[in-house]
Image (spheres, helix red, strand yellow):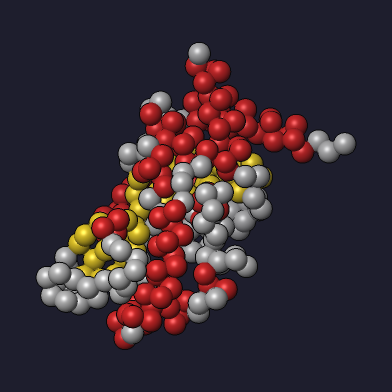
Amino acid sequence: MSTWPQQLGVLIKRAAEDILGSQKTIALTGAGISVESGIPDFRSAQGLWSRYDPEEYAHISAFRSNPAKVWRMLKEMMELVMSAEPNPAHFALAELEQMGLLSSVITQNVDGLHQRAGSKEVIEFHGSNQWLICLECGYRQEATSLSLEEVPPRCPNCGFILKPDVVFFGEPIPWEAQSKAYEGARTCKLVLVIGTSAVVYPAAEIPIVAKRNGAKVVEINMEPTTLTGSVSDYLLQGAAGKILPKIVEEVKERIS
């Protein structure tokens, strides 16, 4: 009989203790936390990049040269995201924040599921699908006002085609998001790395910066990553939607 579930139980208790012992904890989340909400990782076999070449559909130069073509992919992506619901992992992080045990969530996701689960301090490193922006005049509107039957949408101010307010390849990370994320990494005592392979930079530097400044790094991932055994202190291997609620249960037991 495998001892892995028992080992995982020990690590769940350890994570709860580390959260309670930390003066400041942040979370870095990636596509893996939203897979359980029905949003495939773009890089997975079922993801968008298996059918749409990122250079052809997700680079800012591609959008500028042929926005109508890119919007064919964007329509599919937005329909998927808009139909998704937060899962237990999102709710667990929101609960940790409400308990005063999580300072912020830095997310590489653009789906808005952390906010919908109740998290307040969310740093959207790669922007948000919840907003549309005009690259010509700066006009912004909520994506929920968009009829996906009428794409590509046009700016009511200048007539240019609107773009989701997400970071395309070739675009810089929003300055405010990057500044807040790195400040959190430099000042935290614990970072939870959840559902990310930590290979996309500059977001992948966040746990490294935290570690360099003396923080513990705890991974919750389905598989080991480049951080495992080098940057992270330990890995809780499995689905975030199952592991994070268990950690919250352990935290509650210790403070009740």
